[in-house]
Image 1 (cartoon, rainbow, N blue to C red):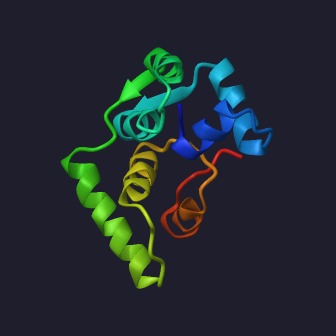
Image 2 (image 1 turned 180 degrees about the vertical axis):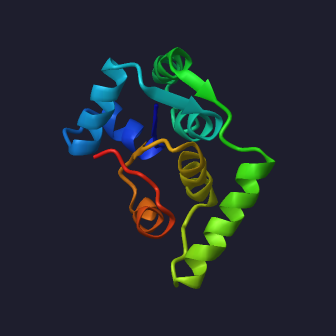
Length: 130
């Protein structure tokens, strides 16, 4: 299974032709994308138009669902955030560290278009689907 970050979903729905959107399309065709609580919330909160919101919600509802955050992931995410800070890296959004930690702990690759994940790949072992 594979996780697609909100950054990939936004580009995908906007019709952006790029490696990450092509990867997302491929994995959707193979029914390998996981929808998680954090990505669903982050993704759907951005829709102002009710019709577009419902269309996006239907996409999320059709995917396999997993809870991304619980006590264990929260503690490991805090450790990962601290580890990155010791390397001089400040991640802009804690939610990205939680998503990355979920992927790392479950050995799921991540599809994204967000530079905050690059040091997580380099220093934490996050697998990226390119």
